[in-house]
Image 1 (spheres, rainbow, N blue to C red):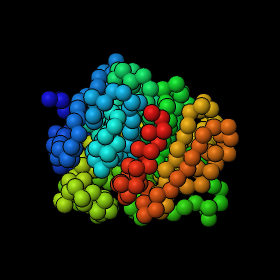
Image 2 (cartoon, rainbow, N blue to C red; image 1 turned 180 degrees about the horizontal axis):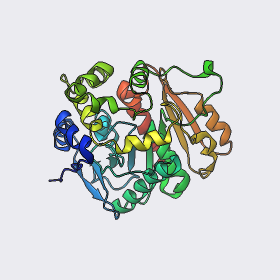
Image 3 (cartoon, rainbow, N blue to C red; image 1 turned 30 degrees about the vertical axis):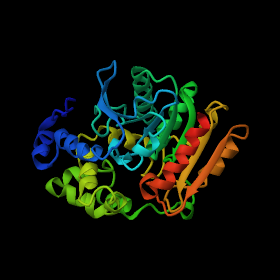
Length: 342
């Protein structure tokens, strides 16, 4: 059985807050177990220890299917492996699927990240590569959602030989921030609400400061998550999971804050660097038709990579969490891309 990575309190405020916050790594482990028991395919869940003592919580589905290139899925900000539950069985029907909690998120280690944007980004990318080496994965189809898409792209710039196909799902952090306010898409209501309360604090600090009211805030700000996963859970399992993922030590959240310039923009926009990915790495971008992310990025990536394969697609009836809004359409699209690889 995997050990829980409980974070030791630091300072008087931190040592007081755990009693105020109704959360722990053990509670996160328990709610995640309720989610993963929905899987029909064989799976293996464990910690992967990195040489620097950090641990990456990893779930591998269909580990016995070794003949095809594995699919590796990287979650977005505030997420974890459990949010892929609507996709795991379908996408592991003919190949191995690996999902993991990013360093600083979910059940993975929560170290102190560099405070500059480049250093924080490099820490994430290096942890992904060290995880890959430790797992013994020669190459992969790499899929990232939101922040995960940003990091998957950064990874592909640095380690293109490991990526057979890059799939970017509503990727965060690509466009440059417009100077004209009228060109900025309005963020979701929950983002504006949190920003107005917290100002310059960490993006999800309100969940921790709210103490016993934290779980209720998730349900209030994000009632849509319960609807998205209603086929699997009639109760508040997903809301609980999101709460426990984000009520812990905000390690990855602090790193994300260092990388962002207000919630929707990156300090080091990826459009400035996408041309650095080796030309022979194919890229597919999948957007929700109703997303708050700038979907014109797909066309701009094509312009940046005129001699490379770049395809952009939209899924009707989906917003930012494409994989959960329209899971059947999303799964079919990703399966088609994977089948094009092998």
